[in-house]
Length: 158
Image (cartoon, rainbow, N blue to C red; front, side, top):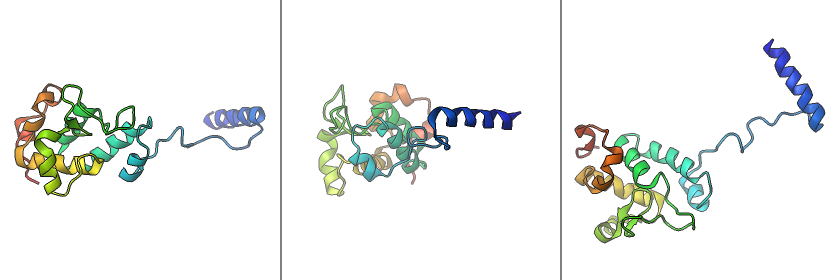
């Protein structure tokens, strides 16, 4: 019965459109996971947060709490609606995906050669910060990610 249904749908579609091919797996229906370079070039596109989330999950697979912190801090966005680096609502000095505070961390990130205004630099600095201080720098959003255990919040061992 399934074959008849598929064939029937195919025949109806082809008679209506005059096309013998079905629009399966088009870019509109299957989102493409992009590289960080293409994410940064496509600033502000609707798919940005989806692609950024996938990228964050891959990069922080060893420290899952940082994935949740990114979700809570920026909803996986690095750019705002004006295609500028996302700034904090409560504190305008918080920037990017991980909401790294410029006042406290810009000089140190620069000493490490990390640009907190790029996705990769923002994430790399967050990783360094987590190794040094655990989740303490993001305690203001802990109500959002606090379902994690104390072990998750402790200093990273990687």
